Amino acid sequence: MNFEPIEDAEVTVMETQKKIKTDEDGVFYDDDMKAGFCTLEIRAATYKTKIVKDVEIIADKETLVEVEMEAEILGIVGSD
Image 1 (cartoon, rainbow, N blue to C red):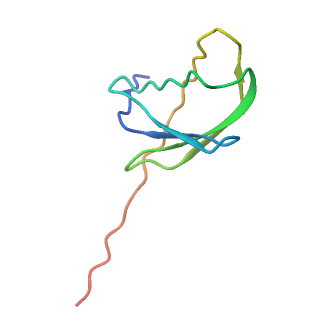
Image 2 (image 1 turned 30 degrees about the vertical axis):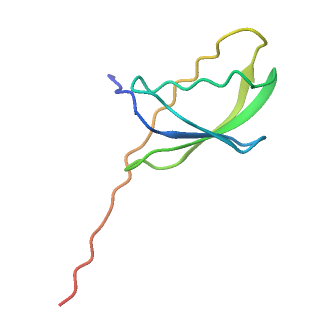
């Protein structure tokens, strides 16, 4: 399956409530994250919000988290 990166997705580190936007490659960086486990909430326009639990952060190492986002179906209700 081929996935496209999502630019400008909002990633919230739930333990600190810090919000970070992804770049054009769908990547975000936070040099202030402490080693240990965290939960990420990911929001992006036209996608369902995704919660990723138990993300392990290792000191002085880059952590790769690949997340499959599900498209959100929006309905339009008309009036007469």
